[in-house]
Length: 300
Image (tube, helix red, strand yellow):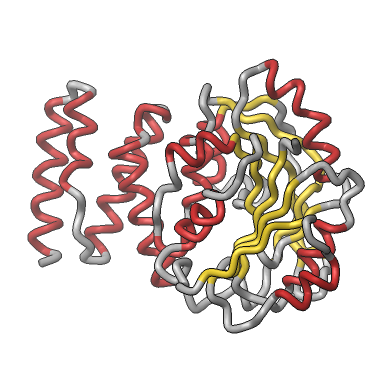
């Protein structure tokens, strides 16, 4: 049985053929491909059948567009069918290098020896014409998930969903955190699905992330939703992930979260103040509680 599953949550056809070709052109074919059609107006089957034959793939045509509610719900719906031990979720406009599967199996013995449950590889940005925009490879190896998360949060590195390979059982058990546009969901997954807190990094360009006017990253039409997602991401960091991150980082997130809420008249989740109570910082707890009260009173 193959140990790696590649799933493609399909909706947009614009660059789907490029994505398919990158999967078909793998030098190692010991993986299983799953494609889930999220009620797209564009039928992908002609392209799929152009490059693949049964039983080389599993295709699911869903009648309801669940990704419109939240992209992570579509990922999880396809994941229900996955039997393989490891899984990559590949965007329907992203591409993988021909040696992607080969490098996965090459690093697997090290991963298993160190009881690691999440692998991340180097990526590059490409445009609509497959032209290289930026290269993102870092001097990591076995690295703390918290360190990668903080660097991404501070915009010191680039990270996205497609270059992550997860241990399937942890994704199925924990589920993805649901944020608008799934903006930040892949970042939280680094903390949530790395069982022992470490990630194995492969410092090679194995994934090409498409930046275009059709993508969430490249389009300007989603700015309001992105702001909402960042606000909710900060709330999740404080209320649900503070035990996985350094105290000084959490306190900076709280400060940013409250200041942004104040200036944008956005309500604050009162639960954020309990971070200080858990740390027995009573003065800071009372001070923050007063601030939260006034922000929420103003935002009514």
